[in-house]
Length: 95
View 1 (cartoon, one colour):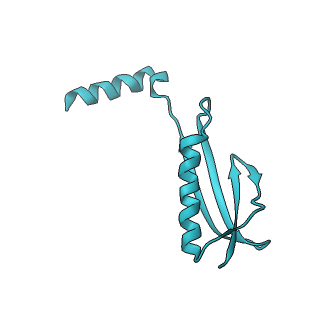
View 2 (cartoon, helix red, strand yellow):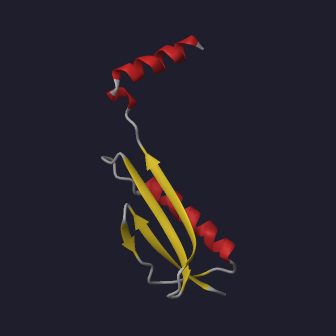
């Protein structure tokens, strides 16, 4: 079975995967990369951040990436803008 390595980029910081994982197909490696992103989103988001960028690059040995999966999360605090909050409240009560 092919051996795939996962490199993780979090807000520009690179963590190169040193231990490969065996998957029967590249599609199986893609599914695992997506699963990893959902776990990162669930478990590792900093609470004081307004957003995060996560990317996982999948490669074989020391070769170039053959697949990438990305997740971008942004937080917009609507209550910091009183005019926007009033508009949203008004629209919500009209329905």
